[in-house]
Length: 134
Image (cartoon, one colour):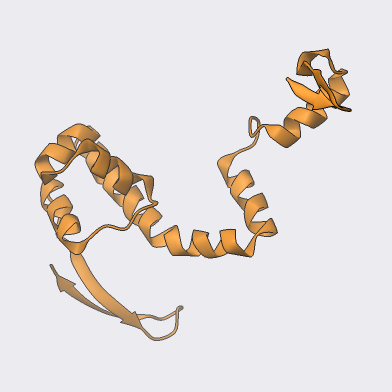
């Protein structure tokens, strides 16, 4: 249903061109996530800032998913290995939430990996990294 000129109208009753125009405005169907993110970033400085803030969590999420999949584990199985809940693993893999160093250490152990922490200085094109094994 759609309100057109103050009247409730079924979308399928609109002419095809009008229906496409309406659906393009109210539906993300047919667009890629990357396209949608790009358009939102172009329109909103706050969205761009949030994207930058979440970038590190998204990178971590991709690594966790990659290594979990390589071991053939479900999120529930990984949660049991880590000693946490399925929802905690889901939040980490969403790339939208902070994770403590303690949880990262338990994740690394559960995935048969080593956690490496450190700092980076210098120019972005030639960073100087100081790392420690956690």
